[in-house]
Length: 468
Image (cartoon, rainbow, N blue to C red; front, side):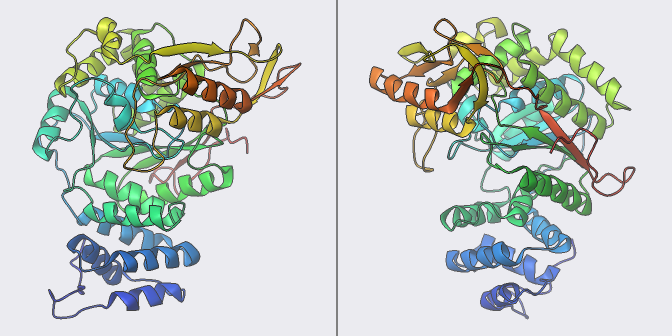
């Protein structure tokens, strides 16, 4: 990045007034690189106020940003803090990012798989807010685990074990932390240009050789509408390519359960079963294997999709991925138990009972957002950032679309802190399911589309699997 010619404040010979930048975007003008970088660096330094951040975010909400503006904003967010470097690694540095969904525990499978195949995965993750879960809350179900190390410790963990899952520190993309907090308070979180810059700005800080996006759509996702998901997937790939980061985006379905669990410790317990080979939910398995395969191909660890998929299956079936997961947990201060005993260290809710439908039938539809809000009501998620989280509560053995349910086949098992919480949750779960006499007559695939902006494939493309 060439240095910004302008600054905000009194640190340069030429200054830009924040209100002038806001006015230009409010009036539909295209902001140049110097203006965007000056504004973002002013956010990081404190020279730009929260009110000015809010005004620019709202102007972007209404006027949008073109690809060049999104790229400048992304790079400015990256440059507001430290960018990690990995000079001595024996393999590529790779990561994935999910836009968020109920029961989304893909990171816990994909990271160990890719590490077992020779990649290095520095995952910087977030916490839950609203009806979607947070990766940090899930891994913190393990007692003693450290998710907020200093940068040097984080890099050492990745170098030694191939992966680590941590939270964002103040050194990494500090401007984004202020921008996101203001977006959350001003109803501009859903702005696609701001989403693109926020995601990629943080990922570029990791010093990656490749990124795979898992853009989830449906009632259980942050990005609910299919068209919005398509737009986000395409724009992330285009901006990542412009910023020099090889990127592929998958569009995945979140209109029904991705796995059998929703809730922090319950999801981790299912991942342990998955890595151990005890049970593998087909929809979750397909997403995990596809994301991991894309990462291996991007990183040059496989020449084509079939070779990558074979490597993924070998990492799972040989137990190598399971060993990477166990080593990650132990290495970050969590329990040092072997994988077969690791689940015993997770907290257990005092109340655990199944909820059944009123009549026998087939699941025709599931409102995943209601299931997500059920977990929040139980205490497993947050309504606001200051809320604490109970890792033990949630939903297990969730019935999937087309499955038969009845008096002896439950909709779910509810794990609750009290009988009264279980009663409230059972009513919400029952309301989330639509039961009919026949199963649905159509099948919605879990992988809805694929986008990329790699040089060998040209501009963003969507594969033939799109069902929209």
